Every structure is written in C-alpha cells, then in structure tokens.
Image (tube, rainbow, N blue to C red; front, side):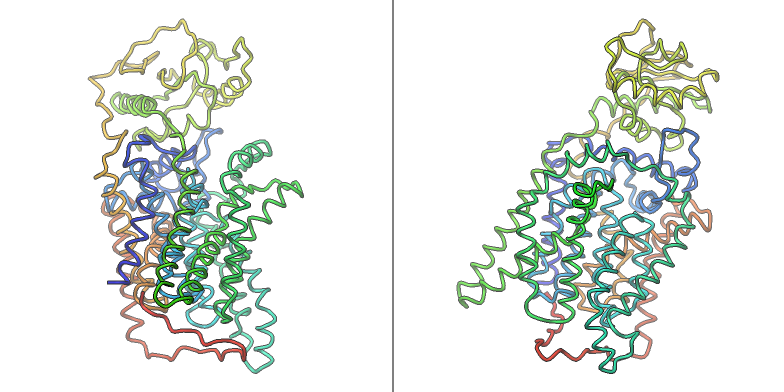
Length: 633
C-alpha cells in the first residue's frame, strides 16, 4: 500500500490546491485571459473538425491552428466522460498539474536515483510550484505539454544509457509538438545542450572501446535528430503553418513581463534551486549526473530568457519561458530530498522524524508561494457576462438560419470579450456572431466609435472590431446588445429578450429563452467528478504504453501513465481527424480513446512475448558508487 499512497497523496494535494477556489466558492467563474479561447476552439473543432481552426473568415479572430492537440483532446474528453469544454476548463489545471507532478516524482526516483520516499516530495514540489500556478492561469496548451515533456525528460535520460528505446522519446516529443510546438522545440534545445555536456564522457567511453552509437551523447543526438525530423513531418498535419500565426508585439511583451515576473519570488527560488543543484550533485552516479545536468540546463532557460529580454533587448516571451523552466521545481524538490537524506542520517531515531518535518515545511513553503499566485486571481469573466452571452447564444440557436449576427458591447477591449462571446456560443454557432465595441448608433451609421473623451483604448477596440463587422453590415445582420460588458449612452431602443440582452434588429424569439443554468458556481460533486473522470481517461489510455515502454517498478509506470495518455490521445486524435477525416465526438471519440488504450495493452502483450534480453549495465567509473536498483515506494 506504500506505493499506492505515494501516488494518491500527491494527487489529492495537487488536485485539491487547484480546485480549491471553485470548491470553496472563492471563484465562481474561470480564471485566465485566454481560458475562453480554449473553450471556443474546442467547441469549434468538435463541431467542424481541426480544419475549421485555419478557415476563419474574420481577420481579427485567431484560433491557433498550430496547436491542434488541445482541441482534439477536449473533444475526446467530451465523448468519453461527458465533460464539455466549458466544464473542462474548470478542472484541467488540477488534472494537468497532477499529470506533471506524478511525472516529476518518477523523474526524481528513476532518473535522479533518490530514495522511494522522495517520490511525493518531487511530485508535490512540482505540482504546486509557482511555475505551474502561473501557467495554469489561462495556458492550457502549456500545462498539457509540460506533463509530456517531464515524462520525455525521464525517457531521454534512460535512453541515453540504453535502459529504454530512443523511439519512445521521439514519440513523446512528437506529441509535444502537436500540443505546443514552441515549447517542445525549446526543450529540444535543452536536450541538445545536455548532449554537448555529455560529449567528454562519451568520447572517453568510445576511446575505451564502446561503440560510438551506444554512447550517451550519440544516443541523445539521435533522439534530437529523430525528433526534429519527425517534428517536421508533424508540422504537415497542422491545419496552418506555425509561421503564419501572429506573435505578441513589444508592448504586449513588456506589459506581461512586468505583470508576471514578480510572482516568482526570483531571489528565493534562485537560491533554493542552487541548493538543489548542490544536493543533487552527490553521490556521483552517471545517470544521476545526467539527470542533474538536464535539470540545471532546463532551469537555466529562465535565466537565459531574462538576460535575452532585459539585457540584450531581444523580444522573447521571457515570462512564458520562465514558467516553462520546469528544472526550477525539480531542483527545489531535489533540495528538499537532499535535506531529508542528510538529516535522517544524523540520528537513527529522531533523524527521520526531523527530516519529515523539514521536508513538510519546505513543501508548505512552496504551497504558500504558489497560493499568492493561484488564490489571488480575479475571474476572467463575470457571472452576468456568462449568463448574457449564453442567452444570446440560445437566441441565435432558437431563431436558426445562417443570418450573420453582431453583438454590441460598450467596453474598452476586444480580444478578451471576443473570446468570452465565442466560448459561450453553442458549438455550431461559434463563428456566427461578430463583436462590435462601441455605440449602436455608430454601428448603424457604418463607422467605429470615437468617444468625446478620446478614450484611446475604446477607439482602438472599436476600430479593431469594426474590421470584421464592416463586411456584413450590408447583409441585414441580427444585432444584439449586452449590458454586462459596459454600455455607452445610446438613443437606439432595443427589445429586451432576456435580462441584460437587447434585440436591436432581428426576428423576435419564438419562445422563452432557456435559463443557462450550470454555467456559474459548479457544485463540488460536479467539479470533483469531472476531474476524476478526465484523469481516469488519461491514465487508462496511457497505462499500457507506459507499462510496455518504461523500465522501472510498477508504481513509476503507473505514475507516468497519465502523461503517456496525454501524448497518445493527442497523437491518435490529430491523426484520426487530419488523415481519416473523423470527428472526435460521440462514438468516434470513444472509439479513438478505446483504440489508444487497447493499442497500449497490445504492446504490453507483444513485448511480453518477445525474447527477453538482459539490460545493458554500464560499468561504473572508479570513483562512482553503485546505482541502486529501483525500489517500489
């Protein structure tokens, strides 16, 4: 039961942390500026397939067709669990943080060779880290790819020393490219740096008689090269070339850097990471040293990004790279594991107790740091906005037809409100309405709003929205006005068809609009049940793959199963849509999930019938200690 507890405890701690605001009523609607965008992308793909992401007629609406993994997974989750993209957005931070944390626990015990009791230490240190707390606020693609990359980090270390196949690492990296190619490529740069670091010892091994292709540097080089070639082929599956996707400009980068960088408490986390690097350097074991180097290099990407942005004035999203520098929480977990090892040796009786208290205090400190980020967020949308947009969507669905529609709001922004508008539309109506920011009079007169107070934000938002509204003004569009986004003084009357929703032009409703219940303040039962269902689908889908492809004890394989589930469901989902033209909802989505799980179990059977081969055991260096065998937690 010890091994099972080592998995369950981190899952409960991590999952509870990320669900806490919603379970306690601290937050009733979703966190994150970009969260609504993930919802409408998933709804759009469920209704029309991945091609729809690249075939949007509106110039100001971008659907990130270069990241097909998330909407494919969301469709499969909806088919298998009934959790729609809106409800998924509530629980996905908790689920993905658990996936990442469990993979980190396996990395700590299998790659860093720390004792079995350190598994939950690494898992919790990673799962509730500031990196994940910041990334979870609106960056679902990042959260999904992070779990796959941590698993790939472990597989690459094992593959370098011939404990598993390079092809497994390439498979995970291809999945990562489908989820978020930019961070997958960044990770490949980290692995390439590790390859360079391993060149001296690999050269010595080659001079000592080892075949050159069996040396760690050569095997990692093959993995990077193979992943690069496979990734280039993977780009061909994207609905759109990544080079055609708009990137944030210097002003946006500067604003977000100033907004986000302070939450990381960099002096503290940097010092903590340095202590972890020192603790993980000893004892000297080749696999451990390679994992140490990977962790340090991965953490170092944060420093490199900050220097590039602040010193060299290169326009890179340093705040995003810092969040994705998962070597930092790995080193922080290593510092706690090292302190626990050291203290426990001081006194056989009290040492382990003092070590447990020390490690627990360290994890509590990480939790406090992250709470400043995750628990102090303001929801990205109000309850009234959710209700009014949902009612507008019910109206458009009720009157039917393909008549274009315009929704008028009086706020002073466009992108965020446009995402909210589309997120709460029925799946087959996601692209029907177009947003206009300003006054109804100006819209009817055929020009954007220029307020008397010369509000630059409103002028910019109105001009931006008018770009996509102007082409349909001559097509007799339905016009709706929503009050929850702010109202400008107007003389144009409207017919109230629901609280806060005015019909300016268009057919009257054919009946009462159904109340959008269940969109605000989801019950604890719904939240926990949805999180458990999604996590179970990932675990079942990936269990066979992890069992067949990962050496180690059964608990480490189970810990990696959700990460393999993310990877394999993303791969099969994207392939099914792009190559076979299948929609991922309903029975097809269930079939894809079942096929993925059964394929993994089939691989277990096949590998179990193959002739066994003794694993290659590298002779330790003269000053190295023996590497302990994997021990069940």
